[in-house]
View 1: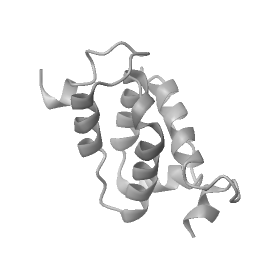
View 2: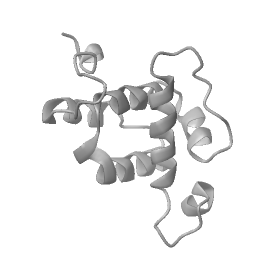
View 3: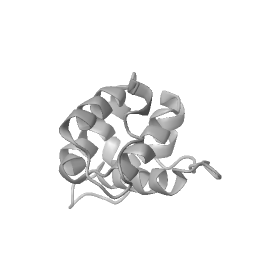
Length: 115
């Protein structure tokens, strides 16, 4: 098994094991600080219950360029993953990433939270 397919062996609803979670965290390191902030908050809130399906959805997002990912996270563009087998999971994870941008008492807009 290569590093590229480490997420393929898990059932969609099964929780990630520690080794795969560690690999996923490493894979999610970004070149833009803004993206890293979204991703770190996501892992801080969801790492314990992250499933293989969600991890594959996150990988779809991490395959984007840094600027395209930031536009998605800020709600400037919509996710275009039609036909991708992990599109639904990617959309779910995108919602979790956006929701994690703002504290509970802050405005719902992810863009407002980043400012």
